[in-house]
Image 1 (tube, rainbow, N blue to C red):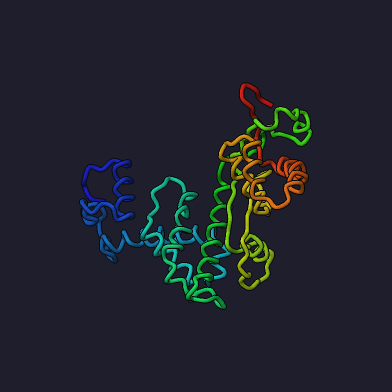
Image 2 (tube, rainbow, N blue to C red):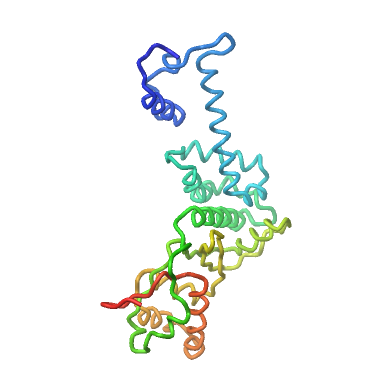
Amino acid sequence: MSALPFDLQTLQTWMQAVLMETDTSQRIEDVITASEQQTSRERFHVYANAYQARLVDCLREEFATLCKFLDQDVFDGLATAYLQAHPSQSYTLADLGKQFPQFMSETAAALADVADGESESDGTGTQFLVDLATLERLYAEVFDGPGIEGLPLITPDELKNIGPEAWPQVRFEAAPCWRLIEFAYPVHEFVTACRHGTEPPIPEPRHTWLAVTRRQYIVRRVSLTEKQFRLLSLLSQGLPLGEALDTVAASCEDVDAFAKDIQQWFQEWTTSGFFLRIRQINAQF
């Protein structure tokens, strides 16, 4: 180390800036001394290369199914390009892959011939890869984020205690780990199959709606119909139940069947831990 008066915090800040290539004002030679075998820059790049390799390894773990599907060499190339475009800037590696699905979407041209059996012209193969990356990122966010463990949740029995006159104005407060998402492919089935050790082919495109949550520290997903997805989306925006139901019912061909399904849906969603509590103006249940 040179004789420059760097305290530990200053040195750490400089090291991070140089690794992220955001600061070149202080020469490496002025901070790191050379050895008999290596120059200052060679010594620095030993650490820099190990740091880069660790970040790529973290992305492999988070996007394990995508990595296996693409082949590790192909994935590592994408991961390296991603880190160059979006260098790590958070204290936690949990944020490292946050922009990776968007990066995959933006580099669609480079991915066009990766998904075998799909047309390069219509982009469906690329969309499968983007959907896959998006789902794996969502699983990671739900797993690492706040959950419902230890929190009191609404139960199906409590729903029965709400009078019919109160239902139109109730609002549902979603669990902090609950997410809604839609895909062009049933990527959740593909991920599950891969995690069970099979090597499934790319599934046929199929509009897919999912609710993803976490219970007892296990990430779980629930397949939804389009009507269920629309209703839950409206409720998640804070709309009262009556207004949300009217909106979805307006596009239903069979309103009576829709009305009969609603009670069962809410029992299932409540059991699955979608909601923390139900609120009404000037009241709490």
